[in-house]
Length: 503
Image 1 (cartoon, helix red, strand yellow):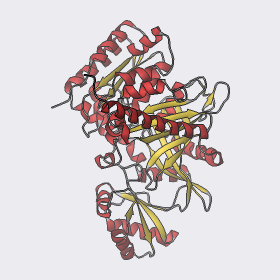
Image 2 (cartoon, one colour):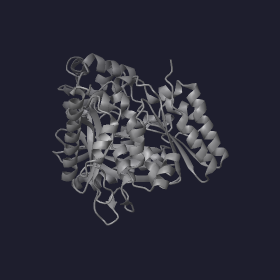
Image 3 (tube, one colour):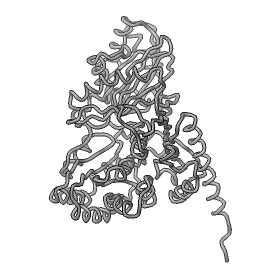
Image 4 (cartoon, one colour):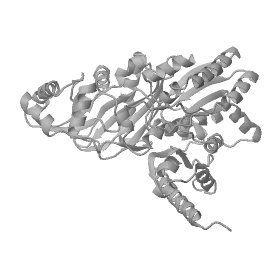
């Protein structure tokens, strides 16, 4: 049975659309759209669509913007009130923000993509389409459907709602596959590691490909990358090759291949290769940095360069978070090479949020372009959050600074874990934040924290956070203090639950 969606917020938004003029309507379905296997990794991954709530923050920053935010499971009115109120306002402005924001929640915490949950509810689709039609009839601009990642499902959803999809057309997503990205690097003339440019779908073909590369580039450690459907290193595996004979390479692949992702066995990994194909790439050796560049591509405005972050990467290549800005010794070089890739993507018709990942090798010291993300990334939502909640001077592309010239720093992570917080409500966390002058966001000082992954708090004792400060050290301290606040909140809640009730 399809879970019921709360559509009352659409009634309120419809009244606003009917009584106002000159608004822009954006619908947001921040469904991650990775493979089901990829979504099974980590804690609370199926709840990650709540990261897309950064789009709700924009209602405070853009007074002509109206947003329909789709979420499943529900995040709750407390979170909505908190987000809409991060930027201080008077009562009239607060009421206006609420009137322009419709949080449509589906009471469904099943392990399915948000897009599937919406598409499985014909009544909700009809109701959303009615709001779109009303907006157009009232003369408002319907921008379209924003999402975390494009997919055939997201295309179907946009079609059902009668809107454009604001991210890259699903027919162009091949440029974001490992093979497509490497083809793009070669065509753009950016530095990248030796390897293959088309996917192979079985071990003999992969072995033949790798044997040919070994003849040219030498034996040693190579990386096998599943062509698409996986992120955070789960689709990567190491193999050490000592011979350029195809038979020997095939034996190494079958007996010595070592998947990077925890819990992934060799047989399973090779089944993914058969399913979607894989490329091979020379191992970079000792890596000292994982910078990533972000941009937004527009069909009319071209490339908007957002910035360069340092990704925090675990031992298995898993994404743990990011720091901004990236280290100065390679930041400018990353920006220069990334702009070549972004321009090439825009020329090919890509649009919306995109990212390009890099590796910085220690010896020899060199920068390598490694991956294209034709979607939002783990760095997109904290970056957009900071741009929205702080008063910034954005005249220099890729640089975040306050209006009085101070540099802005932030540290974001999806993995603040406090098992004692299982069962703690988001309302309790928000109250604790409001009572903490060090942690509650101070826009004037440019310091504080903005949580995300709200539904994971009560279920798993897990939360994400973007910590904003004036230095990297201050951001690290804020993340630590936020973790301590969660721990204390969990302990306090547990003590309260153990107290005997009054007779």
